[in-house]
Length: 261
Image (cartoon, rainbow, N blue to C red; front, side):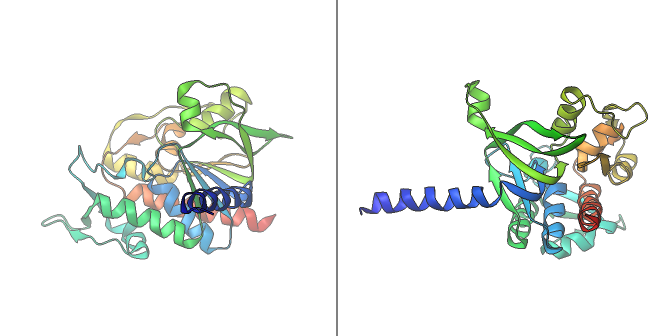
């Protein structure tokens, strides 16, 4: 066999095995942002089978660019234990006790590495176009290639079955919006629907990101800015402690739920 065929065959075979192994998982995460990557690491370390479906080529969400392309971000003291768990370096801000700066590129790459080496599988360039909804519960995802979606090609998708689905799509809350609009479910919010993200208020947004992280319908969870959008929290900009703590919290909630089954 020529080296060209060796390379192509190896890629097709290896990816096919990886995809087949993850068509049924404990947790399917949509979006590979910081809260989702943190959640994936802790859930995998607890023994759960986790797959992440990321629309873009590079996971990491809004981490890479830092604040307005200054590739630095801020994390507060309460989330430093997560930075340490991923081996992310940080330094205190002079004159501002309890806050640290860190390189956003190091943070994004370390979160990806940490999640993958804990056991999570990441499928990039893959979009979620619908949910699987059976017997009053969210049971999985309907997936397709991002180029297929963006070109508007009429190509049927595949399905991924999961005990729990985690919406980590950020500001749009795409998966919970799908569930709300197509399945017409009533969410665990004051109105039963998505409340929408509010303007920037950093300290409130940091607290509400963690507070709003929860199960919004049987089998359907939200973390990070997706949770804030669903529950009407404020945005917070390039400070990431709340995002990380949200991922840590949702991991605990899903681990507990899966262990009760």
